[in-house]
Image 1 (cartoon, rainbow, N blue to C red):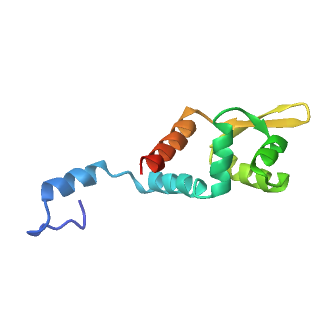
Image 2: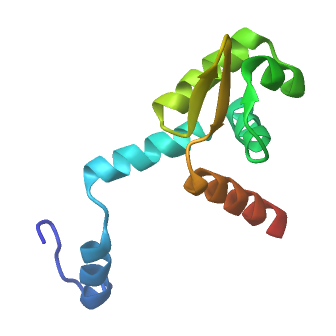
Image 3: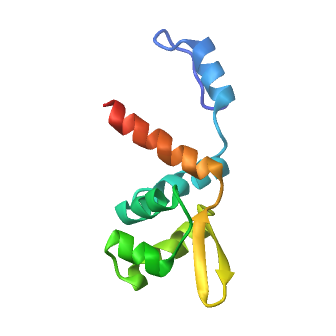
Length: 116
């Protein structure tokens, strides 16, 4: 472990154990990007709406009281991070959460806040 030095205030065993469990830099970057995507209240509200059903941009805009343009912009960010996916049906595009992990992440965050 480069850069690690023993001194009397450091528990070497615990430091080695923590170091062995660290995620690598590229995973840390992806995880930080995920949390950054979730740092916007509009995107969190979109995720909230999509936890219950799939919705088209028009429906999301009406539910969130946002412009369709603003919703589309936020959905693009969520798609890029693979948080939502879409399907086309005629002229309509319906969005849903990409998978159960996103729904679980949202619910766990909400539970954490409500726990106080």
